Amino acid sequence: MTQTPLLEVQRLQVEFATRRGALVAIDDVSFSIAPGEILGMVGESGAGKSVTGAAVLGLLQPPARISGGRICLEGNRIDNLPPPAWQRLRGRHIAAIFQDPLTALDPLFTVGQQLTETMLAHLPMTRQQARDRAVELLTEVGIPAPERRVDQYPHQLSGGLRQRVVIALALCADPRLIIADEPTTALDVSTQAQIVALLRRLARERGTAVMLITHDMGVIADTADRVAVLYAGRLVEIGPVREVVHAPRHPYTTGLMGAIPRLGARRARLTQIDGAMPGLDSIPAGCAFHPRCPRRFDPCGQDRPPEAGAMDPHSVSCWLHAGSSDG
Image (cartoon, rainbow, N blue to C red; front, side):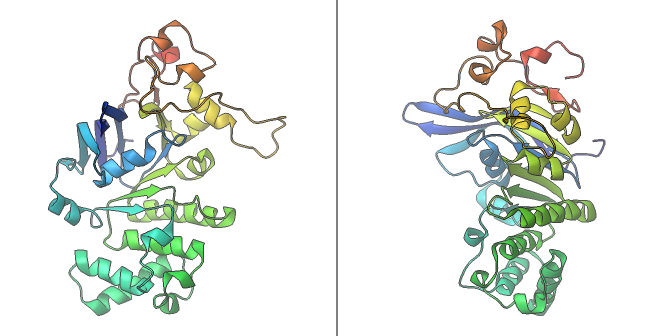
């Protein structure tokens, strides 16, 4: 996109310290997100999606640490901030939506109390103003009868309504960036569609940048503007969602797309990617995907392919495309 990026992640590396040495969980990953853009981040469990999100949120806990690269928000570097600065930044400028709303909400406080306390912590307003704003936010995220729901406790709401409250909580201080980590996984299909539509609308109307982390390529196809595909902590493909979905270049992305059921498709069975994601202590040499790749050839098991470039609209880290001019 031509807009100046709101978030820039440059050659990010995250390590886990162990007795046998450091294990690399995120290896030289670069991407950016523009205002109002939804970047989907997809991959199997263990690909590094949530670790990347935690690094951007400043929520990595020992033994994990950022060992290389830079994270910049609106041009300012944030990966090296001290804890007090992170506390001011998180919630106000960067917010999170997590998979399980029951763990994100305090069962001892009403929905309204949690929303108002968050606003009072970050914004100059009175308690009555915060409560009024809480009702407005509940209305904005599509919760019916917000004047009544604001005084209810999380256990009195359905799973879909709780997830909407979590989204309202993330919006309290009008953040510029939202990290949504598997926000639809625990929901039924119809509620998933509603949450997806809500995230799209918020990005368009508020200009909020969204990093949507999921293992579900169907959700990505319905929601994101661009998609980044991670495998074993490496970025293997990134590009506009339509191009990546309909014309994937990396064999791993092709496998992910082949595993999505399609209405009207006459296939006896879905595509299966043989093997499993390697552990951090057993990532193979060369391209990490090569032991599972049906199109591997000589360089794949020996040399790591060039990184997927952050500057190219659609780029791929694969020896099949290493000599092409478009990625």
